[in-house]
Amino acid sequence: MMSTRRLRGDPKTLGDVTVVTEELRNLYYKRLLPIEKYYSFHHFHSPSYEDADFDNKPMVLVMGQYSTGKTTFIRYLIEQDFLGSRVGPEPTTDCFTVLMYGEAEGVIPGNALTMDPKKPFRNLDPFGNTFLNRFQCVQMPNQVLESISIIDTPGILTAARKKLSRGYDFPAVLRWFAERVDRIILLFDAHKLEFSDELTRAFGALFGYEDKLRVVLNKADRVDSQQLMRVYGALMWSLGKVFRTPEILRVYVGSFWSEPRQMCDHYELIELEEEDLMADIRNLPHNAAVRKLNDLVKRARLVRAHAHIISYLKQEMPALFCKESKKHNLIYQLPVIFTKIQQQHRVPAGDFPDCTKMQEQLLGQNFSKFKKLKPSLMASLDKLLNNDIAKLVPMLQQQELIKKSLPGVLDAEFLGTFSGEHYKRHPFKEFKDDGGSEWDFNEWMVARHKPKYDEIFYNLSPNEGKLSGAKVKQWMTTTLLPNSVLAHIWRLSDVDGDGMLDNEEFALAVHLIEGKLEGHWLPRELPSYLLPPSKRLNMTGNDI
Image (cartoon, rainbow, N blue to C red; front, side, top):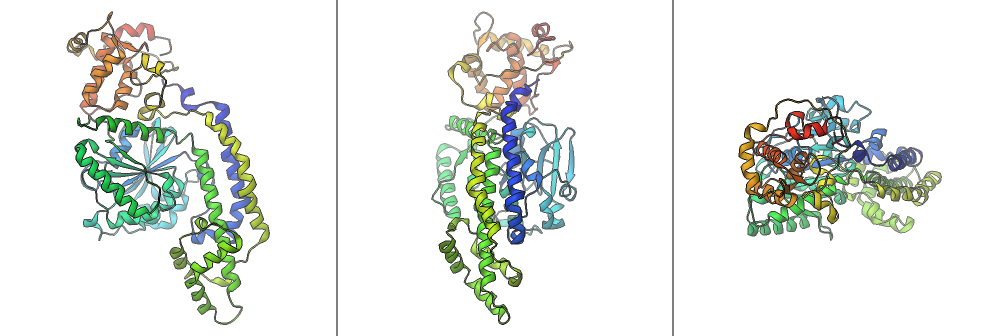
């Protein structure tokens, strides 16, 4: 079994991270939530945080136009199918599906999901039944999902389907998730790069969360290098027009599925890009507390700007006459009011909400019920931003010592950066397992095809009955399976962990590769019926 110590990290350091999260929760309830309630922050912006928002695992939002490979990408991450998943060229995902860890496999419908206080989705209820009927949670026992949760989204409609109505505010739902997730994966198809109206509106929902966004140009092995260069350039130009920021978004070029890739001139580039993206996702549990602190500070700054706006509007309203005309005049003058508040209270321009959206929301509000600035609340908010948050930074610096890996294709042992000595034993990256296992002694499943596998083994010229890691890797890569998949096969096959394969271990590796090429899923750990006979006596009662 996989080492639980390697998955969980150092208990003391993880305890420090728990302390950081708990302190953030206390600061929010003590200092920020009272101001949000006093100035009706949730009427204009996002609902208040709950305990589940602080306790939940890191979440990854996967979005993109239909047929860009969203569901396939998720299956690639978790290395298995999930309930309700379908893959095809037509729009196959018509709902928001949250993949979370559970001891038993099952589906929780949207209405029930928003009633569960232990899950961070209770505030989705205002989007109505039309949305909730297209919202579900799939729970399943999966090692990757022990550390992160993944959200699959409906395919964004193209121009040809832009007249279709979803029945709910799709961009608003995306923005709700964007505020709460740790990473946003936006996929594009290298074959059909199209920016529809709904995609542009979806980009609008992501404004302010560009730091969480990672763009993936998928299926890049299906185009030649010249076409890829043109598509990449067109994508960067289009993204620059939509986001209008001086920073260049990071675009990963890849082909994210566990099937053999087509050989192309940029094959090595695809492998390197895969490692970069997997490393980014793998570090999400490691950086979860940092993300929560960052989001809390961002929210606190918005609350401060909101309090000043509401207070200013209250002060400018007349006591008795011409209230309605004054209200409309203040809404019209809102850009000027923003500038005045910036100058008088030294509130940065980046802390203010979108002016046009704020004007729309103010139209339905009663300005007479607004509250004036309350010095004690503002002093508490200033203390949060200037003192309390600063005290948490040393704890976050201690968190840098954590090395928390995600298993499967995300495992740091496969795709991380390693020193040279690791490659001496493991050509794809070394794996060590401390878990114990009990084996039975059924017939070896690989035996029936071993003569065929032995022919390949001896053609590779073994030395003293074993093939070196370099030779095995060179042969494995000819299958065109992704390196992450081959790394998993290597870990399963190198049973004695000596960095080389004998004829039985090599036969096992070829058997697993053939099974993968036929479309089967690889086992997480090697079952007893695949354990080579010569290794069974050595493995019985011992750690692998």
